[in-house]
Image 1 (cartoon, helix red, strand yellow):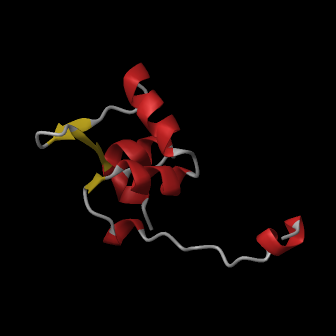
Image 2 (tube, rainbow, N blue to C red):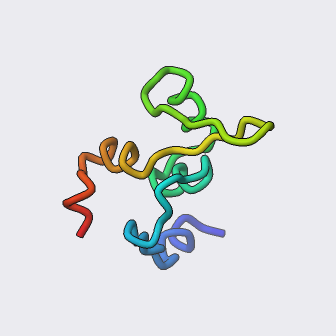
Amino acid sequence: MSISDTNNKPKKQINLDSMPDLLTVREVAELLRVSPLTIKRWGKRGKLPAIRINSRGDRRYKKDAILWLLGMSPSTQT
């Protein structure tokens, strides 16, 4: 596969209104276009605080915190 082949892929549209208030590591990584490991590292450094759920300690991130990282506020999503 050549570089031009990868550039011709249609871009996935992200609708923030349809997203839940708590996002998974994978959802945040896709939204910010970074690795899931980067999201976990940001959490450890305090850049992106995580909420731990269930006995496994799965991470969830508040949609408002992600919007803040993107320079948006919940009222400017449209």
